Amino acid sequence: MGTFEETMKRMQQMSPEERAKFLEDEGKKCICGQCPTYNECAKNAHEGFFCAWGKSFVCIGSEEKKCICPDCPVMQDWGMQHIYHCTRGEERAQWFGRSLR
Image 1: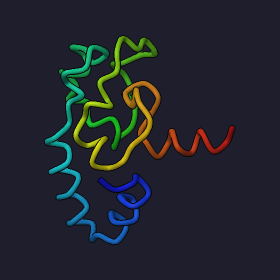
Image 2 (image 1 turned 180 degrees about the horizontal axis):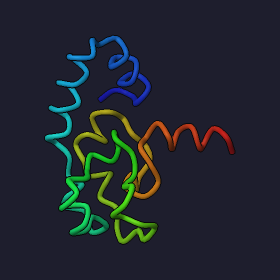
Image 3 (image 1 turned 180 degrees about the vertical axis):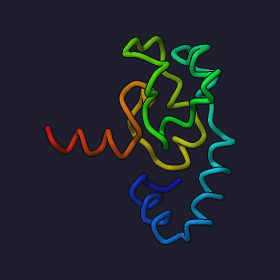
Image 4 (image 1 turned 90 degrees about the vertical axis):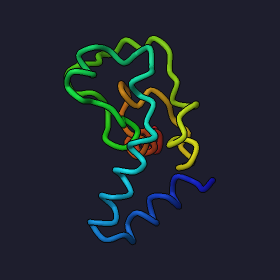
């Protein structure tokens, strides 16, 4: 398992096609749909993979029921440290927000 920074650096070195394929493959490991905070609206809108794409724009509000992010293979593989990506934003955004405090 690498760190999140290493994963981001590795992705920056990929061609756009390689990066798209990598994200597609990683997205298949996503467990967002199993989370108690995930809802029917998010399912119908095909929202998910929040750790990479960012928080829900329409379907998931600020109510955080229970987070299963720490159990996600993507989070573990990428060395992520934050949770509730569906309500708080993708990992990079949470890193940036933390650095502003």
